[in-house]
Structures are given as structure tokens and as C-alpha cells.
Length: 255
Image (cartoon, rainbow, N blue to C red; front, side, top):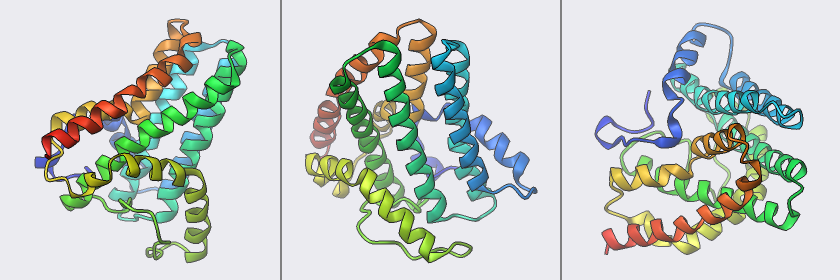
């Protein structure tokens, strides 16, 4: 099941694992496995990938990073198939992503003997890239009656959906705001008028999807396999220059 109506769907370069994710979700449809179980699965896959980096098993690193991306899509697919959307799953997914991203970048810093300041800058860059992509994507989904468990403005604690506890949602929402709030504010400051955009064309969304976490992990995987791990940090710092270009394009086509 897609997050968008068919006429508004675009080629999402970060979502290459969706067919496999749908297969996994369909396989788990009539089992006791929940989306939370799948989220735990992608955390384990991400941690295995990180362990493989220490041992220089770079093909295995690539495999488990890509598997992590597939499972990251499968938890949402399973929630939609079972008709059990939840804010618990949404926030747990996002918190798991940012923690794994931090550990991954810290590991890359360790094995490359890079500078910690550049590593922190690369982490910030990756988060800002992903935030811009999610910002535009959520605007599109809300505008066209797509999946709405993600909100354009995460200002207030949402009301728990059937099957989840309000206390759990409250705690996860606070943690989400601590981890993502600053990135959301920066991107909103940079392009606050995007919310009222009449046009977010498919070609632009496809371009911005290179900022999606799935595509970011694919790039990291390829760079490890090609033994270019020393260039991962500088690449993502430089790649952030496209943030300004994408925002400028979005403003130009909505002038």
C-alpha cells in the first residue's frame, strides 16, 4: 500500500526496497508479528552492519545496511496491511533511525581516523537532508489525503490511536522532539512557505528523494564496497549544498 494516491506517486530513489518490504509485510500479515517487531529487526540489522565495519567485512556491511532500509519500509507496510497505524511505531521508527545514524557516523569516524568536528557536521548534514525530504513528502501526503501518521508540524503530542497507550506516545513524542526538533526548525526557517505550495512536482520529489535515508545508506554501502570509506564524511557535507538548490527550485516553481 502506498503512502500517496496513485496519481501523486513519484519515483522515490530512497525507496528501492519497497517491493521486498511489501513481500515481507504480506508474509507477516496473518502472523503475530507486529510493526514494532519489524522495527526491532531493522535496528538489529543496522547494528550488525556497524559491527561488520569494525571487522572490515564491507560487503556484509552493505548487505545489512540495505536490509535495514528494506525492513525500515516493511514496518510501515505491515502497519497499513494490518490496519494498525500508530504514533508509537512512527516515533520509535524515527528515533531508531537517528540513533543508528549517529552510531554509524561515529563508527566511520573511528575506522577512518577522521576529525570529530567533520563527523558531527556530516551527521548534521545527513539529518538536515532527510528532514527536507520528509518535510516535502509529508506536505504532499497531507495535501493529497495520503498516510497522515506523520504530521507537517510536530508541535503537540498526538492523541493515541486505538491499540496504543497515551503514556507511551507522550514519552516517545518528547524524545522525538529532543532528537529532531532542531532539524525541523532549521528546515522550516529555510523554507516556511513550502506548506502552502501549490506545486511539488514529481520530478522535484524524485530529485529530493536522494536525501532519503534509504538512498543515503545505499551511497554509504557503495562507498564501503569500493573502499572509499574515507570519503563518506566529506561527501555528505558537500551533498548538503543541494538543500539550497532544491529549496530555490521549489520557490521558483511556486512564485
